[in-house]
Image (spheres, helix red, strand yellow):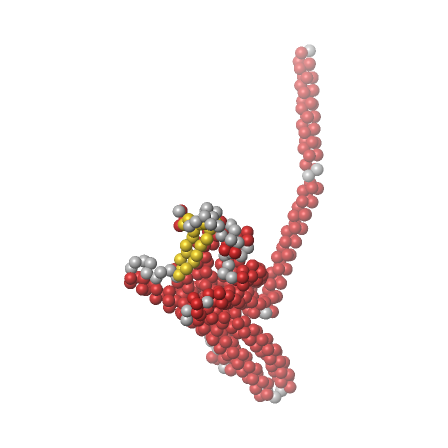
Length: 415
């Protein structure tokens, strides 16, 4: 048949067999939990992009955060068809089932790609924050040595390789699985399966061996670079940031004790109090980032371990349930990026309020200008017909006078 669809029989599928979700748990998560995650995630990441890409917010860190928001937004869009597949109007549709089976492996591959890119961008963002903090710490201890600068072009030199590396590492998802589609119930129902490919499907042993090794080791490479290393690195960098903040407070206290004047002591005490409050805020934010990142990313290790040891083949139901929970937690972590990285900033909230107020002010001014123009048009509308009427009357009177004068001239001429 056309489009690679096979006709297998006339028996029809039952309602449970038509479901496109893996289990009851997956159906619940896709039907009820993901729509909430999608709404908050799209709204939060859209706000991030609007604020971070505005004129007053352009910086190195904000560029990385905006790239991370774009990757998280793309991830949510890639996961949307899986949620739509849990609704009856979708999984009973012949057209939707066909496009879902055809694009399922590509959607999963791009979802892994954007998730990997967002994870690496988060790691680089934390590294940048720590680098800036180290630079400020060096400037406090020895101002002459504080000369670290990062050009704006350097941000693109980081973002582009991150997306390229994420695509290379996750590309095996595009070729590691194949789909088969067939129709039942006299061609009225569509069924499909997505299964691992036969690694020697090309017929070329050399290419088949290279491809099989790439797919086999690609999973472990993704496991190490996307889950293990980021969890350890984010925890280490954030703990280093907390230690750095505490060292700054200690240095500030030593300065306050070295100065003897009352004014300098009072000023240094105020500065120390401000830095202590900043330290508390940074500590709370850092702990929230580390805890959230660990809780939402660490469960993704379990499916990899089960698949490596072959436990998923012996008992697939717990494996599928674990995959569903791990994916839901991972998406939750992407949604919480808006709260952890951006909305917790006072400057971000002020900038957002400024953008919203300026937008509403422009809309109100445009409405007022439209009302004024409409009122002016209404007031000037009756004047135009009167002018036209007066001009037409004047023309008629002139014509009548000309006719009268002409008639008098003819009468005189005849006489």
